[in-house]
Image 1 (spheres, rainbow, N blue to C red):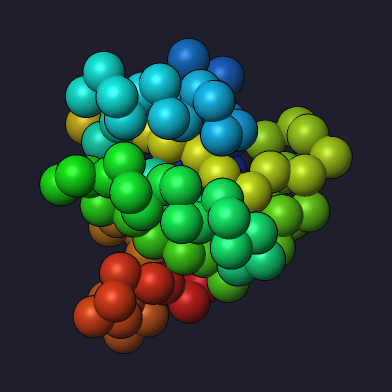
Image 2: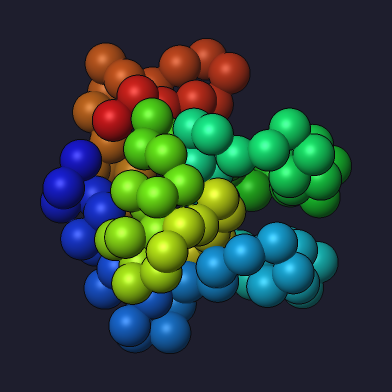
Length: 109
């Protein structure tokens, strides 16, 4: 999981990660989001809003809470992030253990 969170932080520094509800919804609306990640303790309202706008974009619910995800991104907390680069999205998916991927799209890290 540390490698996953480190790469997510690198994607942010490279300008290839949108963080927060409004930027993620904008990326989804413009077709720029390649993968969406939700913190385990993201509010139900946040989760519902994101799932309504996903379309074919993969969404993973991480076992990391908002504070752990936020810490990896240099913030106090973060419930929602979207990767906008296909290369970063592909590599992040590779870092998720196959045994942790669930049929409902959730992931245990």
